[in-house]
Length: 400
Image 1 (cartoon, rainbow, N blue to C red):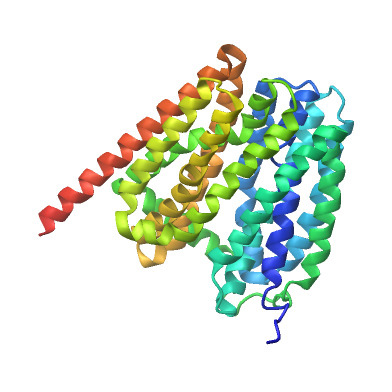
Image 2 (cartoon, rainbow, N blue to C red; image 1 turned 90 degrees about the horizontal axis):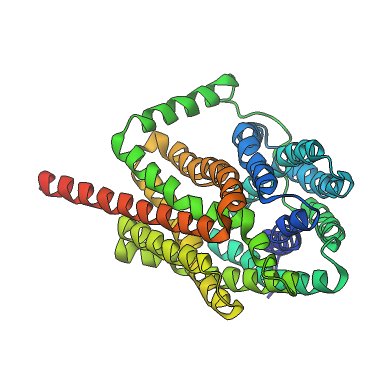
């Protein structure tokens, strides 16, 4: 039977993109620390991405939706970002240069993941494929590659991260040409007014934020997201302060986390149908509290590896349940906006707060205090989801 490369081109693309992602993202905060930056400075750098992304991502979305420029955006973002990243090597001890580089990097990199997801979803629908099955290919390649990169950086030095990222992302940029093409830059006929989508999106957000139950949902989302966002910014630096083969340990720990997410992504639909959104969000927040509390104890490497097994729950299942809850508890005209609001709160708002506050906390109280605080926030998030569940059950009984 003949296999069409065009049909499976997004499998290949996701596979290599997440290899490039694995070469850079888990290790860059460790490189910052090795380069002499304080945790507070690292936190500030990590907060720039969510802030700039919040401002420019709607622009990328409009260019995709109304002008069919997804492929061009991917070519630009994957082609430029690795060369912006290497500028960190020449920033010296001028922190303002780190800030400028981070802003430029965030402008281009903020397009990459959302565009890849949009292209993958569209490709899956057009070819009767499962988005989850395509996305899992990326999780597998990330999990396998990050351990290899960790060993390589341990042997050749953490600064090798820049060469690895340039090589792998350049390959991804070249593979972009194999993605099925977009429409030739023409806006949809119904897009006569460019301002309409923006105003409609804004109006939809205002309407949702006027609904007490939806706001009640977003508050515990923010609280429970503080831990994962602090983990994103400081986990590699946290591991490095134990000393001894830091790069190799970081690679193995990220491998353990990413591989445990694979079955959760595959079976999240069944789990959600069986237990319901609110119960899952409550339980996953409690699992997050346990995960962050274990990190606050600064345990042995073996316990750290075991603790990474909770990543599938605290990340993959939380995202799956949260996105679906937002979708199912909004009107037909506001479903996309509800999804966007959830992602903005989970990633952008929580990321900005967690990175800045987290760096300040580490400077003054160490990593134990950082992760204890994250555990408390997760507990408060679990309490918020549990109370949301009680309200919904009470409303159900009143309707009956």
